[in-house]
Length: 216
Image (tube, rainbow, N blue to C red; front, side, top):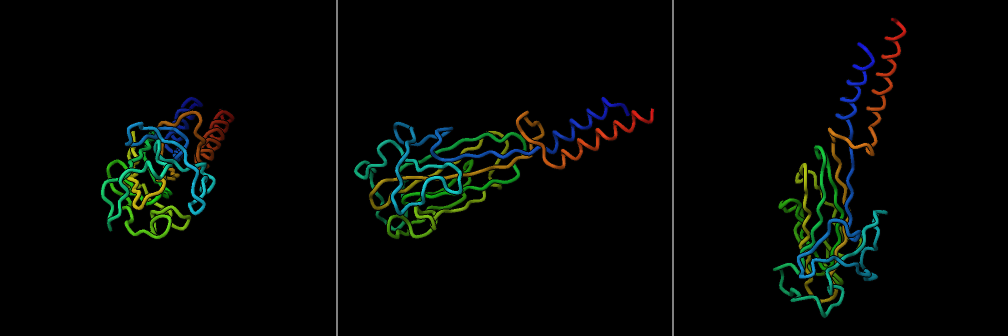
């Protein structure tokens, strides 16, 4: 086998084993929108009882819609035992290149939220009020965040996260989230780093090519 064939085999193996991680967070202004008339997400200063910004060093920030940080502008607070129509619906889109292998999302909301990915409902809103927001996930306090597995609903291509946020008893409305999706990419870009297995194969291929040339 000549060196060119080693390089061809190496390129195929590297492409097959390359992995990538996609991150998406609230408040960075990338691929975010909402259902309110302006469709613009704006940052909100979290209440002292809420989960602080930047959970786990993700850089995520609390967001709301234009006017949603002012209690007098939050429309039709829901006072019944179960959520009705959302106060606002927030969206985040991201593109998966290659085959998705896993995904995780952390979410907090005031007062609560339902989470969907590509139309599949992954977490239902919590109608039980307890203080500043709901009494268990998904709520606004640090202990009431939800960790959601996205894996089964991820797909190759464009993905759409949807957050139906409910404000039930007045006050500002807000949303905080941070997520990642890991993919196995058969067509890696130049900025993706090969896995350790791939690096080992690189060395083995180059060593084999060197031995072959010496035998000749």
